[in-house]
Amino acid sequence: TTDMNANILAKDTLESMMQGLKMQNDKTSHIMQQSVEASKTIAHNIHSMIVELQFQDRNSQITHNAVNMLQESLRHCDV
Image (tube, rainbow, N blue to C red; front, top):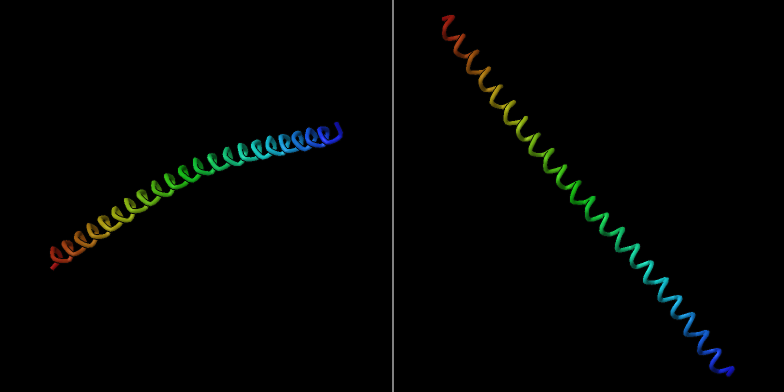
């Protein structure tokens, strides 16, 4: 019976350790999934910001060119 008690105790200890490892794995998986979702959101936000900055840059270029064309036209009219 002494040998069986040691085996039962070892089995119980291993089961407890395995349960702890499974719980830790589940928590880690959950955290990793949250990280994936956060990364996707950040990537989407960065992409949106880049598109908006490109739009602003393009509009600034168009406006600048239009102003230059109007100034050049006014110079030719004043001649």
